[in-house]
Image (tube, rainbow over all chains, first blue to last red):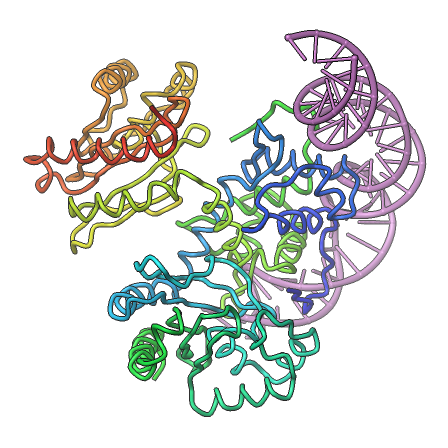
Length: 256
Length: 256
DNA sequence: CTCCCTTTATCAAGGGTTTCTTCATTTCTA
DNA sequence: TAGAAATGAAGAAACCCTTGATAAAGGGAG
């Protein structure tokens, strides 16, 4: 995600280090020097020197057995600082816990960052078979109820940008036709919620509503997610509970 | 915390950026350009350029109203990656939840990083009056049960180093005499647990035990923390439950 | 089980590139 | 409106990349 409103140029060396940090993900948390070199298109000695710099202050640590590198405890600390400063998360958590208790399904809170959605909080169902998604994971906005509700309230130019980047299919039910997606988004805005099944994962179902801040702007999506066969017949009831929860959170954020 | 086993020099620009990131803490999550400049002893234009570099990729974000800078969502994502790769946390969490449920007090998991302790997981009591400490916060090792249990099992040279850095008092009961501290640590090792009151916060009480990994090494401290007047009379029972929980976690980590 | 070869990680030095230092300009707040 | 903070630009100074050497580790073959 790029913020290019400022004229000041970025520091090349700094930007390169940040780019490398972005390689460490939930899917691939461990990297070797050669792997990073190839992935980033940088000399191995450059990569190594960056890793030593990060390791020096605990931002990265090396697994002595495998010699591979992984993110260090300092990033855990900084991550907690970010989590703490999200008023939205603090306010939402107890409401989400209650909603999960009442519905027995996973409750998720997502925001938009750039052209993607990120799960910033979740309360997982305690049922053995449950829907879940990793906290902090980035997902596309056109598949899944929680992200489609966010997409619906984005500015038109941003929706255009997302569509122009392409709409990959995750299942046979994932919408990939731009006109059909726009139609869906219009319906979502009209009814003020999104219910979708099977479009991100087969057998999955999500019921999502928007959360507003004091200025009436949509700042997050709240959803109940689970298995379709469990949720389909009680969708109305789940929707009402989700709406009540979102209203509660919105009010605490200063919405009218 | 410095890892200086490698001969490769760190990148000055990179190190400077990391040093700046370390300024953003739970206590002070927002900084202005001039504040950072003075705190770090760097020119304002250098600080500004570093901030723009971090902002460019979402590692830092600027509050438009106050013009101050705070950590960005990218660090939240990386923080989650770190949290996920901590096998200890994943294994411990359900056990901690049960322990909290059974004891009604806050349960905490701490590790050592450098010469300090860090809380890497906690399950807070649901009682309105409860003991708590921020997740991810660094604390000294000589005050409080959870950290003293960790200190007790550190190598002698590391204990010496910590003592030589000084033992600040948090209450009148905080141990600050090196000989007395060593005595306490010996007792803790002997009995295999630590119970302390009032030495980190007045009225607070903690019961802590060590968690071992597959090699028998102490990798974390597990504790029940609460108010002294609630815990004092049932300390034996709480200690047994804490020991059982720690044993369970240790076994799942491969300890015998 | 040991040795050899291949791959990866680590390290060093000079030329080229990037960033700091200084100060100007813009923006914001009281 | 004035002062303080944020933002931005250009030449000198410092840093880093590029290249290749060395060390370490792992795997396969005998």
